[in-house]
Every structure is written in structure tokens, then in C-alpha cells.
Image (cartoon, rainbow, N blue to C red; front, side, top):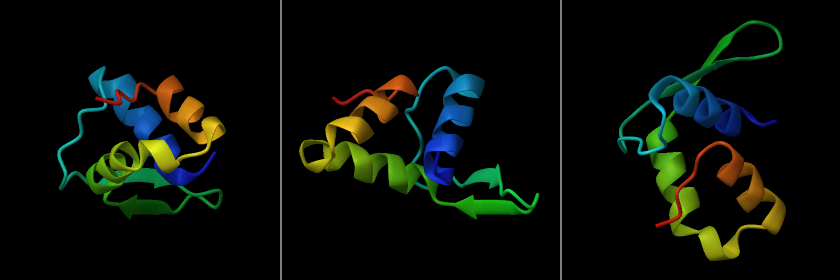
Amino acid sequence: MDRQLASARQFFEREGHLTVARKHVGTVLSEDGAKLQFRLGAWVNSQRSRAAALSPERAEQLSKVGMRWS
């Protein structure tokens, strides 16, 4: 699982939704234990806006972590 998807899953488990503020920064641990940060809110909004272009597998992965498409 990539770090964005892992962070989205963590956010959903903590908050119960994936309505992420555009400026929200997500943090996940890398395999070597380092903290990786990135703009989770921007990423979630980007995935939502590109829904039609995503592979069926990616759309399913995102749906499983609580993505609402509309």
C-alpha cells in the first residue's frame, strides 16, 4: 500500500470520514521508521476530481478506505 492510501486509511479510522481539509498534512511511518509527511487533503481532492481516470483497482482501494465520490 502506498503512503497516501495508508494515510487516508489512518485518517478515516481516526475521524470516521475522508472529508479532508485541502491543507491537511498527513503523516505515515516509512519502512525504516522515518515519519513521512505530505499534503493529504490535496491528494484526496485530486483523487476525487480524477475519479473517471482512475483504474478500477485504485477506485476500489479508495472506496475501501472511505472515499466518497460525490
